[in-house]
Length: 252
Image (tube, rainbow, N blue to C red; front, side):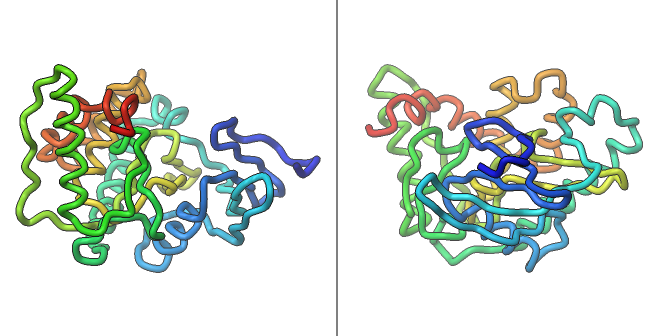
């Protein structure tokens, strides 16, 4: 590792500041880097510039922009006044709307690369790539059946007929939301992103709020869920109900 690097985040996804303007981040592949580039090219969402993504014998890495004078919402939210909080949430609402205008290939849910899907909605399963939207639906229904065979009692979930594939970050937790000195909101860590039903955005925040990721930030979690859309709560409850199977019986 570069001797002068300053650790910014520990494992499992370590990040080092390697210059005044650059960070080096370990990753599981190129989804994070390519998603940032895709978002920059198609939206006004503030994401770090990405200058290089590469692999060596120790793993995959990306070199990207260090956001100067910015703090995560995990640390900054309690210090913000109500007007600033409203401004930040207003930006997040606009960002979510822009993501939902980015539609994927019809009937092909996946990240920006044809690789397995990851993120809170999938637990430890990493399924896919999916060949169709129905295959994605069937994945969750199969896990529900497995859960019920193990003694659970979860009713089927019916995805709406008009379900669209839109771009989803799938990890909008307060550690991945930065606010800078000008109160501009930045979104980082796009490794779980891809084209999925929009309910996945709600589900990820819903699950993480239940996991304590928003400890002492419950009002932030609720405001995020409100702008993402509470109509998706039933999908979040389904995934939370079968989460043991998604996490501990991923091969079934």
